[in-house]
Amino acid sequence: MRIAVVGTGYVGLVTGTCFAETGNTVTCVDIDKAKVEKLQGGTITIYEPGLDHLFLRNLKENRLHFTTSLAEGIKGAQIIFLALPTPPGEDGSADLSYVLGVSKELGKILDAYAVIVDKSTVPVGTADKVRAAIAANAKVEFDVVSNPEFLREGVAVDDFMKPDRVVIGSSSERANALMQQLYAPFVRQGNPIIYMDERSAELTKYAANAFLATKITFMNEIARMCERLDADVDMVRKGIGGDERIGKRFLFPGIGYGGSCFPKDVQALSRSADEVGYEFKILRSVMDVNQEQKTYLVPKVKRFFGGSLRGKKIALWGLSFKPNTDDIREAPALYIIDALLAEGAVVTAFDPEAMPGVKRMVGDKITFAENQYDALEGAEALVIATEWGAFRTPDFDLMETKLAQKVIFDGRNVFEGPLMASLGYYYESIGRRPVK
Ligand code: NAD
Image 1 (cartoon, rainbow, N blue to C red):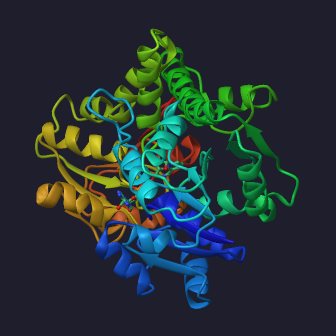
Image 2 (image 1 turned 180 degrees about the vertical axis):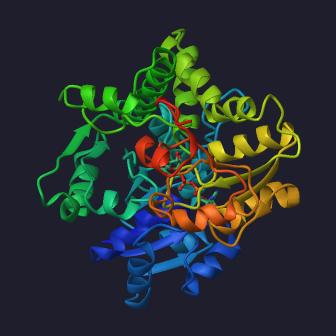
């Protein structure tokens, strides 16, 4: 099939590359000229494990193309995906200007039947708006489908190639048949394609993200209770995770969710609720608790230093909002940096992938280290904000030679208390007994 993907960010590039990988001819469109030139030249623009290999192969085999021209990109495409940003507007609702702007353009240039697929996360009713925006100028037949994307950054290729399920919201048999054909290679193992109406598909994506954000937040509150009641959240987690109704996954407490999706999607769903006169109370609490959770470690660090962080040298491991990505959107580490600097601390950070992005944001307000050990040079405490694999079993001997004091505040429960005790660390984590 001939596919166009409009918007070549995290979702668009993964979507385009993976569809090319199953034999389709894909053109990705983006307004960012520099990004398109890089991609055309074989340089990948995001860090996503496994993606570079597929990207280069499909580029070489001429199945994957990039352009800044929408008209050129959609030429001959049977299916046109919209993988455009839907950032929060001023009131927290999803800003649809990118999606509707491109839809309007599509109406003017479509010259044959095509299925326009919304892959962006959009509020209920957007498919109708997209349809109307295209129809305003369209001279040919078209269908609009809502196909929310559930991939997780860091494992996006795996998630896309082997999705748990594919949700297709459509009221057109013709569109469904094309979508079925396109997705067949991805669901060979028997995972379902779930067909539904557009509105339900749109709400499904928000419901999924809001539920997951709630699950994390619930565990973060249980962790706070553990600290107050002298219990261990790891035990509680295992104890409840064994119940199939609860499940083992997504029960790990930490310093809150971040990234480009959960924060904005929870906010947008809450805003949608407001618009229909419903107060979605649980989402309000989720947002409040998560906001506090991002800097939850800072008062603990401050307490350790007797109430003042002025001039204290703090090492920070991890900047991305989660491991295996360079994405720093809404990353808790950024909030920690702000809070530590506001307290007068001196911060040296290391992250395997996310330092360039943070450097652009904070400039020389903090120092960036060459590697995780250099970040510890002379530090009076280490704060861990992201659970990168390389932080899990570090060279403790080397750490000891660098740190001025053996003190760790672990926002991701990377280490086990007994090990820290045997190594002689002062160690605080989330919802577990401190090691003193
Ligand atoms: P992104 O910001 O990484 O990428 C968006 C791209 O669209 C950018 O490259 C931008 O230059 C381009 N763009 C903007 N206006 C354009 C235009 N008029 N024409 C062509 N290109 C244009 O965003 P993303 O993370 O890929 O997210 C896209 C959508 O997918 C959002 O709605 C998001 O909520 C949703 N989503 C994201 C994820 C994720 O993990 N990132 C997962 C599921 C769903």
